[in-house]
Image (cartoon, rainbow, N blue to C red):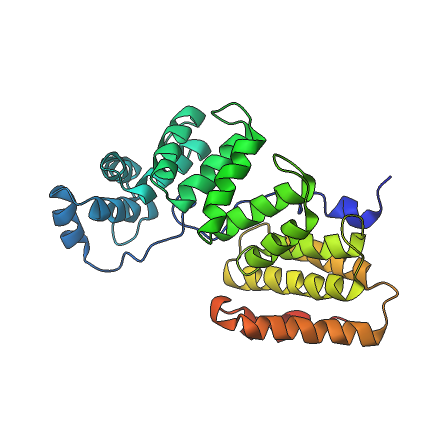
Length: 294
């Protein structure tokens, strides 16, 4: 039987998509300007960007009454004109079966592939996810890794995380835990689970040398990330995410000296401060997230 720590973390370690995204999973765009009337005028004149933004307004019920049919109409017009974010958004809507559509993996793959072939990082990453899971395409881990790599090279955090996971597990690529660590470190700013995986790798000591200091630092940062998400987003599952992060930190710190803990906290604080311009409210919440930890 696996130790409690690893059993408790089995759900967390699996690749997950970023939660804080737009109408159907793509990072939300600022659509407050121009006005709805200006957007509609430009959309009706055939402007793909205006069509995309107008579609999101209807799907998000932003400044207009929610109308999935109208939103999908404008997204499809924009996607057919070659607008990558519209293509990705449509692809994710069909993958999820949201906004009044039925789940349709084949239709999802069609739109994601168009965006991916145009070089869009979101399209590459999400198409890679379809290949990894075998949804709408024949399962192909090597192709998933190739697509994740293209998106990761463009700096997309979720692709860096997913590619890191594949290198950690040797799935679709040769196992390379050191490369996995580098990718997780890049993803850690945007993807909380990357911090969890780093903590587990260093605490486990099976594929990389055990390092209790680094394990504690990343475990502390995982708690910070989940606390920040709970304060900022408040989705229903974040209480359990924070609970699992706290359980991980508790297991890592068992038997650890106060000196090592303090040093780990110092390193975590330095990491937060060095990335403060990319972390939103997390630097403000960090002291509160970690104040009660022994």
